[in-house]
Length: 221
Image (cartoon, rainbow, N blue to C red):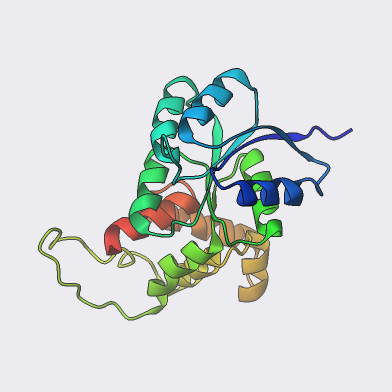
């Protein structure tokens, strides 16, 4: 029997929480082991209940999800956390990444997207809602434009070191394409795609797709 992915859900909206439970109940490889309604409860539940992933809302009464996560990280630095939220502003995303979240998904996403995110995070990956990554990486297809800035006047174009091919591959990454899919679209081998992605990450000094997105956010916001 396949081991189930144990989930804790913390969200202050009862209807949303019940909806999540209903969606996840259709998947035999996922099990909800506990639930809560605010950040304070999240801290208590995590300290008492073993889980694989904490599915955590951001805006909650008593204590927000991010404030709770700051405390949780002191005793559970490696707990996998998937933020479920209506927030899509870049500032919140950056703060979440600073707290080493493993995934960030919007509440409006389809149920299949949620389960894909859960499985991806469980397997050791990181996940950013495709709605966000598309928005972030749209700029790589636009001509470089000098940006007016008084705070970071010497900040270079984040893509100035990338070749046109690397920009193209980065664009496909932003759409959630796998290495195999990118290789098929560009008529290249998967090995070539892997090597090119390694080059991209090295040039912008990131380790994975999530950090690449955050790099772009920091350089263009």
